[in-house]
Image 1: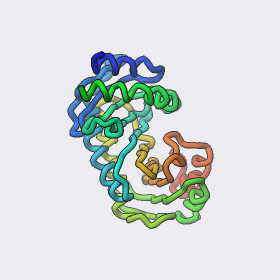
Image 2: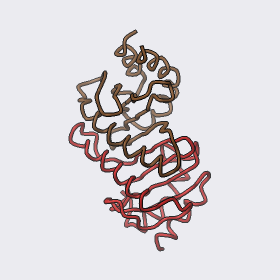
Image 3: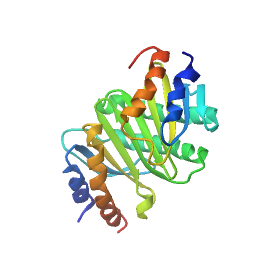
Length: 122
Length: 118
């Protein structure tokens, strides 16, 4: 199964409007969207927010970022580093239509992220 | 009510660790709870807020309402308030990615002290 197929599976979760794999330095490896959404902004967002998050984690005496969510007026962006799935240097990024779908999406991702990480490590 | 008093209800929330009100350019105004390095915390949270603001033009996602970060032992949330930002640190699993009613209630005095609801 290709990366795009895995991401398409995430896009099929109700409430998800875009899914992408981005390297921690901001390069978009693969991405899919449900409409004409431009995902190019995500690279910069991931790179800058992860950099700040790492400094924050150090400040709080912690080593690992589990996930980051930025809630915009028109829906949240969820960023999940794949380090805990043994794939360092990549982040799964999902755009959602509303924050109320976040619980369902995170539940579904628990099963899908390990499969995605496995594909990415091949 | 002063800002320290307005922050007091937050300290009663389950898992509360610290809260800091800071300006959009990262200067701490008031803090309650554990004494993390408030200046560095405020500066980094402001940097994170700025990173998310920079994407406005690219995707018409609208204004940033909040952002949340889950770490190994803590959940960190930053809320946009009128003219200021509020950084909240909770024990992991206590802070919510979506504002719980109890948290929303606890923030009301602060919203009032800062000049209304956004």
